[in-house]
Length: 415
Image (tube, rainbow, N blue to C red):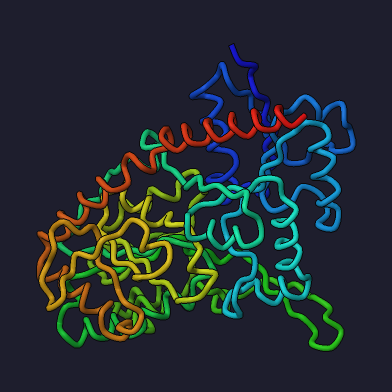
């Protein structure tokens, strides 16, 4: 019988990245293979104690373990102790100018520091083959372990909220997507002009007024942090896109929304827009129960190109139809159901939007679903069939298990 491998997992945070890339995957690994793996999760391990470190066969981390300028020497130390070090990265290290953290990253040269960590890493795991191809330009020892879903987890168990007859179209994401959602500018106005706005409801999930704004002095580079006001929040800007600057909704609902209170509007089912406040990472995916179609607009840039296809995976497990950008991560699993000339290919599992047609095709796709509601059901089932096995936590955990055994065996042969 092989020796049980001990793994130290050092998460980078206590939110989404940790949930999908650190804690849940490794707890599942230990649970599924208890005779093969023991997992410790430690947010602040003592790396100065070599005797303590030597108990581990693998250390898994996100981006860095110690100070960036110390990582090269630390990786060499781990190798000498016989420990396999695996760096995980799920986002491109150099976001574009539109990203809210761009100036912070550039001023602190975090992109250069992460790039150097990739170069000195022993092994790297990432989310997609698209991202792995980019990382391999810096380090060839990169492996794909995609994000995965546990279908038995309550938040991924579909319990669709009944509709009042409107086709519900939802977006669920974070605070760095203003340029992506800006691709939908004008859609609500067109639906209103065509007399279709009463047939839909846009659902914006994750609304959050927490956060700070960092002011950076252009000369001294000094950073000053202050709380944001509600109308400074990017979520307020998102909401203006989904309500055509609050013109598509009733005056009563507009007044209610602009008070920014975490309450539900009594008659929200009869409005063409619904605000859903943020939920904890352990329950956020239950928001998919509030809509029928998932939106995934994406501005074309390198940062977005190498993102994971998590929205596809989540939408599929929740049996949503999806309208997505024909770009980057959404080209991995999705097949366009819209044929040349406008017909439907019922073997497709999505509607894909070419970036050169952003000005018209987001609206056209929504209009097609309104006119052909039976197609929604077909695409929902097709997408579910696409993801249910490939991205199940058990399937992906088996891939992780095999990789970890092979890396430790390779390490032992080299000692």
